Image (cartoon, rainbow, N blue to C red):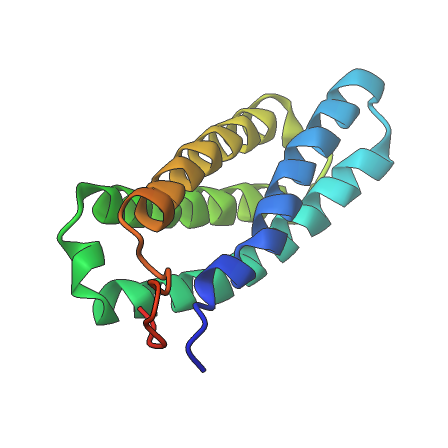
Length: 144
């Protein structure tokens, strides 16, 4: 329909994974099981919706040659795959026992995921704003 889907699909995975880091910190400070369960759900939702975002992003990566020609495109891809793999590890680590696995490894993985997500967002914005990937130019009616 002439509109990029990838930017629309990343909002919730980013929010859920960032909130998981927050709930891990909440557990660290309070040791309340509520935060452990919240983290497990948030990571699961972030991972599931992250796979949807990865599908749209990979589609753009494969269809738009200008993305593959940019270092930012490759870094963005590698960071996002790393985020998904780490989120899967974090989810599986907690699956049987959400509470005992948060400290220290769950919290550290969530912190790493948060850091990588920020870096990936930087490179995604680099593609959009600097290289005009997915931006319809003046007078143009066609995406990309």
